[in-house]
Length: 297
Image 1 (spheres, helix red, strand yellow):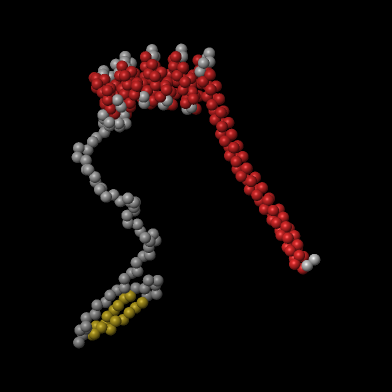
Image 2: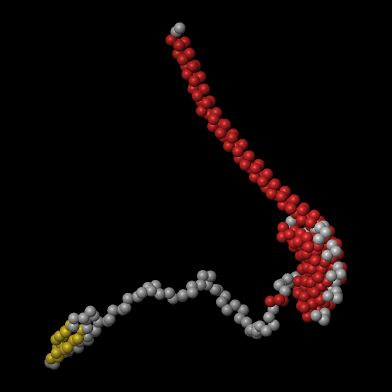
């Protein structure tokens, strides 16, 4: 065999060995990368399954409480309504709407409270019907709930109870009309300014302000005994310091040293021959006494 053939055969065998080693080294890293990607997908899937399971548990709890709204015991129905209000899940809205026909007034009252807090427009029609309830507590609470839900379809029904025989119902109806902001209610609200009850008249004034676009807080914070300055200053400090210093003249040196005692100054008349004689006492702070022997020319 010629030397050239031997060289070619040796080179081919070396190349095969190098290729095999490279595959052995690279293949585990590829498998590790693939397993890492699969692990991330697995973790994401596990997290999604956990969230889905949690939501499913909450939904099952809400469904169980909605079923408890039909319990034969009124106390159980009331407690189920309270629990649904604490969970604040709109999945319970249809079941709560059905309880507005419950024979127990407290159950109806609690359901209206929860529906108002949930602010779900689906409950607007049923709560509007509750304005005709025989219990004035429920009528008043229904007016509050309608203001919270914010459905303008309840304006006509609220205008109809502005003249209700119960003071609280009239007051709550006026406040709800102010919150809904429908200007068609202005005539009814204006007529309430002549109501025999002062709280109703105050509510009417607040509602008129809200209907005119000035929605301030109610007059519960108003103090009739507070004094008002007839000549207030428009702006006593037009350019206030954004970073005021509580100590405008701070002492840069909190422990200052006492000032040294000034040395005595002696003025000498140039026309007088002076021979000063100095006596020094051995003290910490020497004092200088000057005695002058004057010789007049």
